[in-house]
Image 1: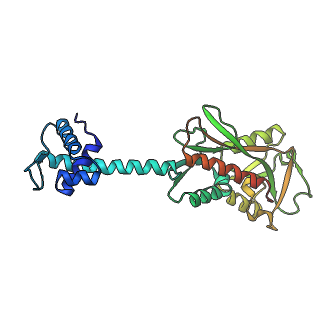
Image 2: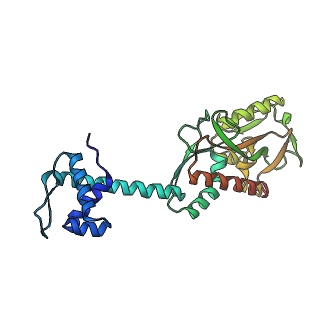
Length: 296
């Protein structure tokens, strides 16, 4: 295997561009003897001469072997520059992060996080993917999940997210609604995602087994079905935050008693994080703190 040093390739490229060893030495800030030593080392590495040296002020000529070395060497030098640039951008926070998320976080927390990251680091790349049902972080840098995940992970709790009952006006008096009142009643639910399974267990523990008449993965679709009179729905506060449900005269929102709630966590692998990932964690924590102080 041929082993060459990038500095030797840089010297060769400078000689070709300048025409002589002397001018290349001036350009690179070396002595001419240092230039000669570096080319000699390069020729030992590739096993033959890379230049024909006519002597005097005449320009050197590249040998056939030298032409091969020069062509491939310039590609290596370009890659090395790309690597150096990527490292500098990484250190400056302009790298890439892969984030696992789910609907409520994507709609409420992530827009502010992504905007602030992009404002601070316009060259960064943020890739989002739906959170795996089995809550495996895999190759993700960050993972939002409604509950703590075991494993070699670090995490921060972002918000407590209480579940609320969405009904139609007149279905209940004002104030909290007891969970057992939902037993046997028509309900619109989510698909069997992680939080829906948890919610089903919470209702069952309270003695309520509602009759699910329709399921949808979309919170807005669920609200539309409630508006249409298909049934009631139990949704987390985060799913309702910022929606028109709070001001829609076709809907009423009630607290539940006992009050079930999920916990939203942000997880990341226990390893050295990129500056961009570290900043994303900081911003997500700030955004979540602001949410807890905001009205519905």
